[in-house]
Length: 464
Image 1 (cartoon, rainbow, N blue to C red):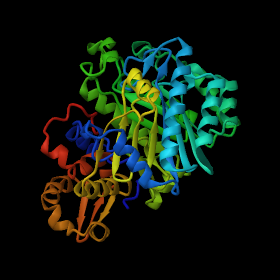
Image 2: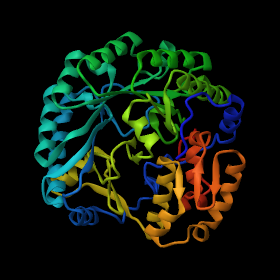
Image 3: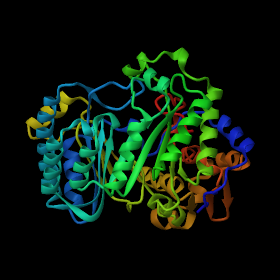
Image 4: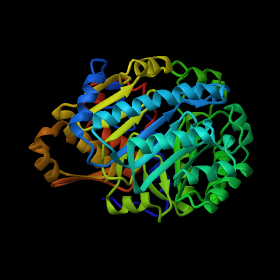
């Protein structure tokens, strides 16, 4: 595996490739990507996949809580903006019905090694509602000792007492949505949360014994400049979160209605956006963070960084993970499951989701049964995304193909990326270089049969 350099890369070389690869592409939390799911795949197919799987091997479980009190203008998540907290009750009732159906199909108290609550804002739920939800999950699934239990936290909706309650419920990992600390930027995206309040929450979380604290950032927001974002990076580095996720803002107002409230003229020009990324990478490496892949950084002793060094990274719909490759059960509106060689996505609207469950049917609205070619390419793409190395022999043994012959067009296209210093072709392997880790989506996309056949990339975020 290509080791992550602990020192900043040649800034000229990094900048040149950042500008060269300023294009859209998939994030590869799955392959094929979710835009390839079909409506012919419904609840009966998902039930069959669950039944065939059984309940022996550990699962990852994701629960989607769609509610938020306030609208963040940049947001592209599936969410419902409301101050009416009573709306959570029928939703939790529907979640209970879905858990019953899933648990029955699995045939027992399936073990879970990873649980994540996302949204929306899971902390929209009251302490009592969170307790009820966790009790419901424990009744249907067996949360294993040492399991990763994580929750996304909107700093505006919690105090130290709430964090203490989350810790008592068993959560050991927190992800704080920060995005930017500049007051003008916060006001422009309708998400005001002072640095001092976030810092106090992070200190409290450490005192409560949370094993890991993550911070989410976004670059390319209105009124951001390279100088202002550099200040945010410095402030975040001083807070010393265990992990940092830094995403590029994709302005797609035609697809995401909240983004229409953003004044396009206030968005930073492309050159400034690329300068933010380049500067942030150099600054975080200089602060001792390891680059994990794509837009993720971690302290050197964080399990994610250790897994990266040991070649043991995995990837699912929540991003990079230390958990062994396992099936994922998605619960809640719009949630996606991966079970064996299948994907299934729930209804995207609350009405459709709750209506299906009130009829005692799983709310699956679309999905996909993977072909042999899909499975082969998934293995290749995940090897590149997670280990940074593709061993031809292991792929040949698992899928009974001659890699050099099967992927001859792809290997030819990779020669351009090899000339750019992103990948090395070896006699029986492909090796992503330390520089190539910053552009691993570009390397992986060469093997994406659907993307190569479809010139339109507008539905994806930028690969850097």
